[in-house]
Length: 111
Length: 113
Image 1: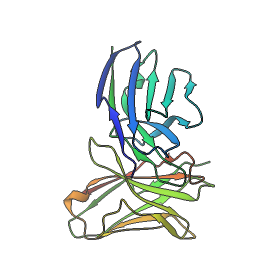
Image 2: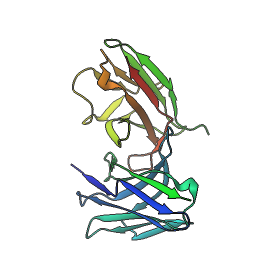
Image 3: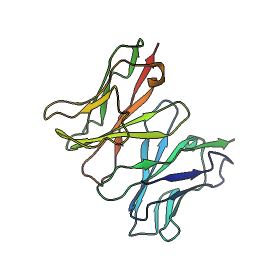
Image 4: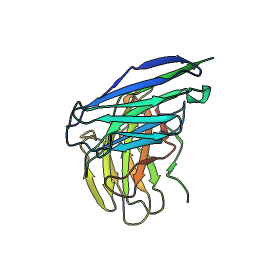
């Protein structure tokens, strides 16, 4: 079955700098790649997603890139702010199948 | 449009008791997924249901755990004879279709004493 690896497990960046979180997946049939943000004690919230027919998608300070050949996808957050501190999960799924999550990246934004 | 609802938000059970967790999907969503999250860990898929059907239960422990999504009413995750290792946050998510984005409920935090 699908396996999603996520790195790093913890990331600290200075406020205003950029943060990059990387994921790999194993099943070449996967075609949907969402990213979720989870603040302490709260539910995971979908922040951006990408499907396999595009290579990049951007929404204000957040962007996601997808390399289908290498089976890599990444989350980029620019101009980081304190409210970006949270755990971020990448995930992958294929048509008519469940979503498999990575283990998460704890992002700390340093003042 | 109300989001995904889960209740109770917190549940305390003694070892050996039963736990029932409820999930009402977003309006218009007919697909429900249950996940378990241990402290400081990721989301582990448990089961995927549509109305009156279990589509994928590959993440469910073989014993003590069951799930249903009846024609009327919420989806229910049932854990019989709970043990301390069952203590976790249980999230459900719903989607409008099989490949649609999933929206999560607030979770039920189960504590087994």
